[in-house]
Length: 325
Image (cartoon, rainbow, N blue to C red):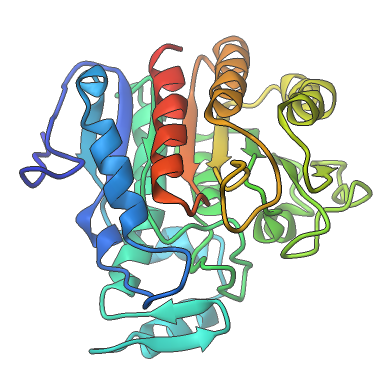
């Protein structure tokens, strides 16, 4: 049993199989300096929301650090070496226009990746029905060789490779509703027939990938670009008509969700007009498919969402839907 710090997101532990929440205080120690979007306050807001009484049934666990083996199953050794060398002992170190490291950043990144593999272990072994990982930094932009877009390691890719290597999963589906396209996931799995990657995202928008014609070597990539200003109707249509049928036909052994909430209408980094009920409705649809295709196995990983109060409300809606699955 893992007991969290008093007052933290890990404060309660429920031992019965349920929805699992995985997080760690190191996510708060990844400092990026003022004026940057991916602030520790994101996790504090989520912690406060998920400590409400209606989430008392969550099983809570602290994230371990990922093994080097798990990271190197996805990333080039040079990326890990660069991050280890760049990690500062004090102050901030800029790795690029959108990448900053503080003394706590490397541990946070290692535990974000480790949270993903731990959640896969628990769901595949039926220690939990499904799981949500509340960690930062996020992951879906990180490519095999490069950190970018606030992302150090590609947490969802590490989770997918771990499900295959450690649990014998033959097919892994990754679905991504972040406002930004997961270019790292697309690159990593472009030629992998065992992994389906599906994304809805604003386009044109950073990182300026994810055109509908980008389909992967084995037709295993599904991109549905959404125009700026698109709302719940367009979002639902994209998923109902283009993405969910592909997930059903793929018959995955586990479903991974890149849960980015920066498509919310008030988010400073996006231009979509989604609200929390749209995320909850999609989560319920995904849970219904998982119940039929994966024996309910879902691991959801926090990606974007940069207005803390709105992020917390959206996460609460998403996790509530997972708990009700």
